[in-house]
Length: 352
Image (cartoon, rainbow, N blue to C red; front, side, top):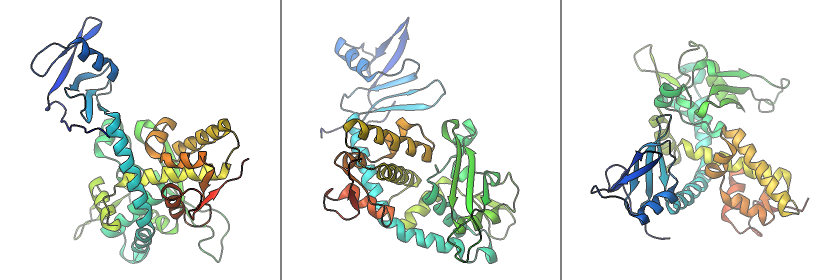
């Protein structure tokens, strides 16, 4: 791939866009006017006219091509397509690494969450384990105080006690795992999307049941500080630090969303089976993207662009789908990283 130049918006040499009548003019890093060639390059960037405070990199091979502020006051970025491609490759390779280490980290978190919960309550390590378990099972956004303050959008760390309930399903069974209690999360997420997510897990249900003894307006993922009666909410930084500690890798909450999105898409394609025509396969892949968007609370366009490893679709086009035998993470590793025809964990689907 071509070499790119790293730049800092508004600091590295760049162009400023200025409105002039019904259009725009551009002022260079030394106050110069844009040439016809410059203007042609700027036009290709297609920076939205509504953006304000627009900065455009002087270097055509910059990793970040333009920055601006949209109508809602949010900073927006236009990255070099080559940079985005590299980042996507790294993101999905990192997802595979997470899939490899997750089973062991999952067992540790479940044990920390369950052992001593009734006797010792919501201690810090136990609340961190609950947060990890929630990300693993539900792939929520980690949340931020900024998003909450600006738009009342919530994520894991900003959920309130009232946003989670515990429901039972099925008949009582001697096998406690046959019908685990369900934790149901209902809240307003990013972009105002209403999330209604249910996960069946006894350990997490025990945590939520105990947390619901506090006020409905209290933060859900909060632990009692030592020597005080006050509870302190987890922060996004603490959650991400805990993820790195448990996995031994440079992962964050967003990697759980990438892994979950890719697994949902792969499982949906496996349910559909390999279609015989290109048109039917394309329809199946669209169906898988929609399933992913519903699971993650995104639009289908964002789900496809950001949360589904394209290797899942490449394999499907070759007639290979996710194995439904064994752990999903292990099957996914085989699907995206191994030879399509002979690797264990993948199935050659018969044409429908």
